[in-house]
Image (tube, rainbow, N blue to C red; front, side, top):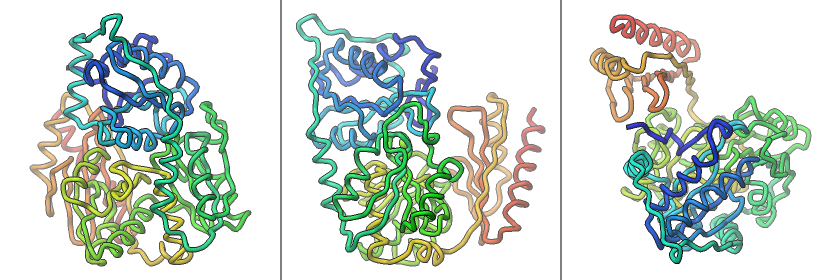
Length: 447
Ligand code: MG
């Protein structure tokens, strides 16, 4: 059966689909949740947001679900609302960090976690089998607007922060949903806040919505010009936060995750930190050095969140700026991530010094286009010929004394990703090339 879902919910280029597509998705979701369910619905700042929001809302109500309309909100805010208001689930209209022509839907369970693969499969089945349920005229769902939970969410984050002195911050909201959250929360915590791109605008005129080093040049410049202690950049739906140190240097997501991991393990006198298989050794090293244990999962934030719940982890996160703080909620939260970084700086000093103390590794990635039909046989051959300690929970990871290599097939595209991480800079490029060539040989043998 086809799948509606990619690695991050359902995404599409807006004008590639008719409006009956999101209406049917709303009906599908309503059928899944069931008549009488109460569902949170929100959207990011994209220009197509209201059109898709209203289509999904119609579908949900037509199937008999009541809709709790949150308006434009960050994804983690909607996840908080789903759990805090005891709803049956939620849907956020967002394409996260994708360019402006995209939009999409992300489905949220009643506990605020992202849908699991099993839940997504059920949505798929209902959609493709046209097994849609429509409510009788007198059972059509109701529409409620909810604007109080947003403030409760802000207060909840503020109550979990302990910022000992005012920090000079610059927050680049990227014209996305963080505009009404991170600057306000940090100001209320006593920090100085300068904002960039803090007007919501779905054309993303300030920068592209993914907070990569290439996209946040203005923030890097502004941090230097203003002598700020930290620069913070969010993605479009604000479940992620990237950072720039006080010298204007971009901090990789693996390194910021390492700082959060050290902090969590120290505060808890140990504990488990859940990270996906493609995370840097830096994070594993610092967790173990501080008396904690790193627990490795397949790639994907829903899997990290569920593993954290299962084992009672003290932290979880990915190397892309998505961090899960269990004392707050079991999902990536860019606002909480920003506040926690400011908290760390306020008690431990300059962030560049903290980064300089981390073990240094070099990580490189590349990808190969492969014939879809050969995906499984290529991965089988990779496994048969793999060397080192093998971890096969998601792709094949080959772990050696001072480096590792990960070969993973994309779940949605005909692509194979190869990642290597080494201690020495020179070794990294060579090892990546050697392994790309090795995989190419496997492909040509099978073709
Ligand atoms: Mg996002």
